[in-house]
Image (tube, rainbow, N blue to C red):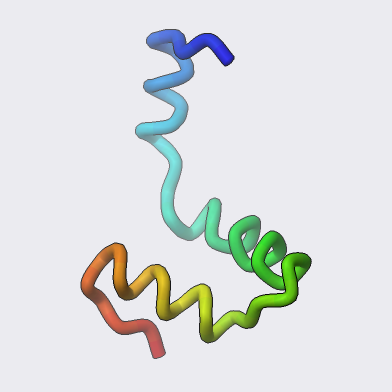
Amino acid sequence: MKVTPEHNKRMAKMTFASVYPHYLTKVEKKGRTKEELHQVIGWLTRVTMN
């Protein structure tokens, strides 16, 4: 995939709320849980999700 300035602008405008459902679907398809996703997000952001 070639990264263009337009692509970078589009990615910068994305919100976490818009991609979270996609992450959740992906981890559940791989046999993981919502709680495990929240744990990983917490590790990455140092924020706990309840």
